[in-house]
Length: 449
Image (tube, rainbow, N blue to C red; front, side, top):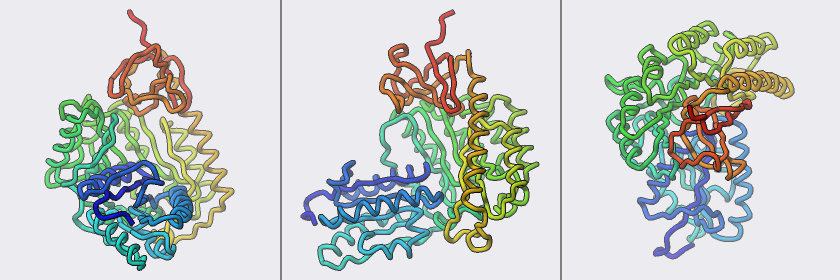
């Protein structure tokens, strides 16, 4: 192991949701304060940390694949391997059985302990003990309100306004990996937003497992998002992920009327069947969800709606899947994240229900919904043809450095040729839409009248 005077190099990999991205910014800040140095190269690292997600099976598989890859590296030289976040919290027994690979396990509420855990693990290796360092207790109070995240340069900055979840949806592991809901002090959130604006970020995304359930004293989420949107220098504010149960009129009116709050709402549906929604403990019905969509569109017809859908939940029949299919047809979301149900350890569904829908049926239902939504998204995006829209420039397109990429107010990706339109990340530009696919709008310089 390195001499004490030599900086310890850390490589951090992040899996999963935006909250994990934000948590990795907290981890970088905490470790840098304690003298650790970060590297993008695994081969240079003394410590490799993986900030993990427990929500989706795909995220699990990626983490286990990376752990497998690290076995060879760890045989070659001293190396501390740490698993952070939701998998560390939910699968601690399973992960501690992986010998001798994982040295540090830290749950989402234990990041302040990381410097001590890592140094203890390094000392243990020097002494030939190879004991595991664990910190997986949940907290009723931890919000990291006093930690300034170590953000990478960009256009968008995350702010976690609350942590944990009280909903206990039967398919979801979050209440067991992130604990109960607790909201941050609002003045601290607004102060963080001001600091973000001073750093040059143009957009803020407010985060929470149920972000619109935020409450601190007489502050609700409508008041909070309005205060953040009022910060000078911030041109757009988004929020994710909300729950349909917490959309009072005050919040809808803030979204509809405030010029800096994006006219886009992510509204997770999960299922169109009342029986399945009840088994999922989603606390709303098909009718109530439709009524909320109608209310939103009555207030503002052009609001962009996206959603989450789960196919093949426990006991879902063909007829119940058909209810979801019909609801998606009728509501016509602009986009949807569509998943097969995958049982998560320790959830209510894993303990009390049977994962009895076959994989081929799940796959067929996902495919059918995906095909439906792709066609709807294509038609929705074609509605922008021959319009001029404001676009926040993010950088180069993924497929070509000759193209620029940004997002519309409705969070739709927009692509254009950089040779025709000069722009820098963070610029707000007006672009004329001349073509569209199911995922992308294609833009040119608007004509001069």
